[in-house]
Image (cartoon, rainbow, N blue to C red; front, top):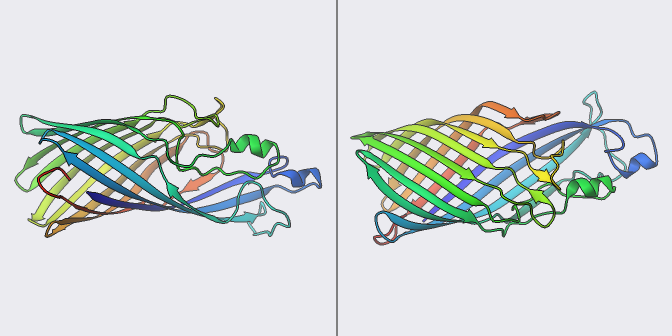
Length: 291
């Protein structure tokens, strides 16, 4: 069993002008404004794996997500402005809920000195989804962009390879989450892909250090088959970081920090910044099964 906590903060800034600002544009000539939005994001992922044999296992991952957002409206010169009406796009709020659980089968084997593990499975569409925010916005209605699920079953594929030499090790991994259909609201998430390579060092029996690089790529989301300019346009990130892990009796604890060194957002006309990803893990093994 393993608990993983991943946190980050995100700042998003973009300009907005009538008629996109909302219904107030029908009442008066509202000047253009900057929307300066900040997010505090956290995910607690509970993972349980049962090993039927050394090679075969079944894994369940249950994500719990928290999203705290605040909004500051600014004039084009950057000075804050207090609106005398309700903005239909953004608000100060805290959202908490279940994401889409993962169900995975695992098969492990060796090729010479290299230990490999393949995983295949699917997501279970239990996370909260929302109505088309762009259709609601065009109608002048308040709407929500943040959702914790996709509303569809998505295949998952993964491959991990590791080679060890006494105190040293090298590990590589790849993962794909494929979106095959749109949900009942017309939303179709973009495909997600990840790659990673790291090297590790066992300092003592209970302390392990590793450092590496990860690449994450996400393709654009679509609403009704259309990629919306203010939606998730897809991105590619390269992050470098390290992990410190140690064992306390039967419990394994870990601390991970990743910092982006390259980010590219497809066609984004505003600004999106995040300082990095902070992760904490705790895991243990029961009986003779897998973790």
